[in-house]
Length: 214
Ligand code: AP5
Ligand code: MG
Image (cartoon, rainbow, N blue to C red; front, side, top):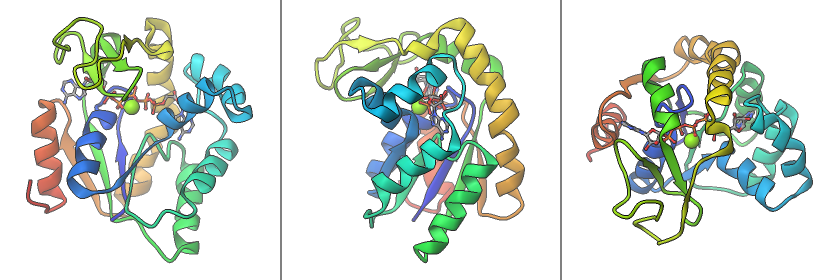
């Protein structure tokens, strides 16, 4: 099964993808996580991507597509895309790539969450520097402040979770990613769910939409 998760920054794509990839034994492909990893390692791609990401802009399509093909060319398991595609050009390239591999998309899941809710969530998100577990200081805080429950490593605030950058990311989503809703709604197995519910409820709803027993 190949699935795309779509939604605003902060709509819960990463949180859902971690649960769903475990439940369905799929490869979680977060282009944001891969790019942050490239930045941390100071690779050529990471250095080129960093100014785009720090300002809340999209990394150019060419770089993202090359990265996807290089990372996933040999992968045979189902792919769960989180934060990709993000432009119609990326969606078209993904269609071509699937065709070249005699594969297809099985579902597109849109997490519908109000803009005011995602703004609040992003301002209070913390992420583990070790295992990548996602927290929220208001709704899902760790037992010990600033420390990951799962691996004990420190938590951090993402560079692009500053107020000004959050607003820019929301605008970029509206301008460049929202057109994907029309692109997929007309042609694919397009599923929409209420991403404003609690994380466990969102996972349960999506598994049920995919007709998989939780
Ligand atoms: P990326 O890392 O993909 O960020 P994003 O799309 O902006 O989404 P986020 O990761 O901020 O939010 P999320 O939906 O994953 O929510 P989360 O689960 O963390 O991309 C970052 C940057 O990389 C981009 O700006 C761009 O520069 C670049 N980039 C990446 N991909 C690219 C591409 N394809 N093309 C070009 N450039 C690209 O949850 C958020 C918070 O809410 C957390 O605190 C969480 O605990 C909480 N939460 C989650 N679910 C719930 C819930 N159901 N109820 C209550 N709280 C919840
Ligand atoms: Mg994410």
